Each structure stands twice: as C-alpha cells, then as structure tokens.
Image (tube, rainbow, N blue to C red; front, top):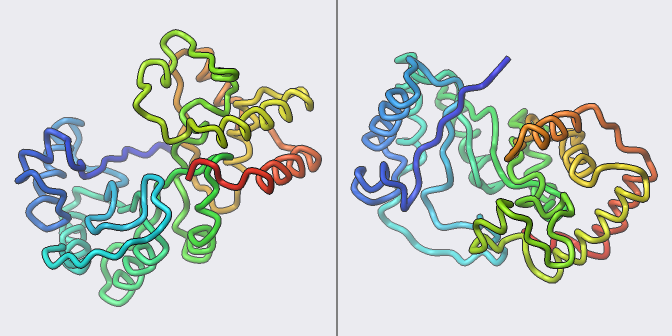
Length: 266
C-alpha cells in the first residue's frame, strides 16, 4: 500500500502568500490549499491530508520552554475539523493527519472529532531520532492509545547520525554542506552524542545510519519512518534497515548514550 500525502503550506511558501500571507486553518484556506494540491498532483483525491504545523504559537521546531501567547484571531479547531469533514465527504480527502503537534493539540483534535463525528486524525508527523526523542515524553502514549501513529521525520537528524559529518567533515553535496543554515542538529552536544552512536554501531558491526533508522522503525508508536536519500546507494541502504533487528546489547548501549546526552537536539 502507498500513501499520497499533502500538507497545507506554511508561512514563507508562495502558495501561502497567495492565501493572504497568513497560516490559517480556516475553511477558505483549506479549500484553496487542497484544490491547489489536487491540481499539482494531478489526482482526484488525497489519501492523507496533514496540517503542517499548528496555527497557534506553541512548542515546535526545537522550542522547549512554552511561552503562552494570547491570540484572538486563531481559527477555532471546530472550524478546521468541520472544513476537513466537508472535504472528506466531497471525496477529496480520505484521511487527515497532524504535524508538529503537541499532546494538548493532538488530544483536542481527537476529542472534537469523537464528539462531533468529524474525521479523526490517523497520524502525527513529528521529528524523532536518536538526538531528539522528545516524542516519547507525552506523545508516544497518545500515539499508541489513540492509534494515531507517528510518521517520524528527520530519523537521521539531517544526516548527522550517519557519521559522515564526524570531526567537522563536510562531504560534497551533503545536506549540511549545501544548507549550513540548518543548525538544529549541529551543536557540541549533538556532535558528542553522534560520535558515541557511530562508535556503538561500528563496535557491533553495524552501519551507523542503518542502526539509527532501525531504532526509529522498531518503536511501537511509529507508523512510518520517513527516510531520505541523495543517491540510489543511500536509498538501498536505508530501505535495508527495515530488516535490521537491534540486539539487546545495542539497545542497552543506545540507552546509556541517551542517559549521558539526553535529547541534545530537540
């Protein structure tokens, strides 16, 4: 089975600029974004339609300390879900999902859907990798108990966990080489943790990237591991990680490193 997924574009995206220059999950913007996606994808429906990130200000993209902000112009979640329900009934969407959401936001969406008979989120696409296991704190229980599985993005932490950036290396055409402004996973704490994860993998005769991917894949709250590759060789290697079963010794080693370097790149 395959999933055709699309998201409502966020701030800075050309499509979003056409939609009044604001991220809004209202009926008008959902309809416009969906129709534009269907046109670009040249299809009649989308299997999984995701809200890319919350309209409200909250903790995502590495933010830890929640700072409440009163926002009077937010689209009510009821309007968002009702608009999505209309698109499901119209046959343009089959399932809906969330992305970069919090435990509060996820449970609010699920509770409203259950109470009103609106579409229920079937997935949540958030970051999850050996350098950022913050999903485990509150959302893992939600994902399992509510059957709203994690679609894990950045499972290799922008390639850091492959070991190719060790000792300050910057291979040609690598993502951090091409896009140095993306520093989320690149800091002294992450580098120290990465060195230990890479050493652990090699100690057990494993490819570091495959070990990192296998760890994500085998989590009970993960529905899909979103891999990426810049070559067919990388793609083959990443796909092969699905068949890798990490030993008890490797898992214990991972937990020891996590204890010493807890979530260095949330």
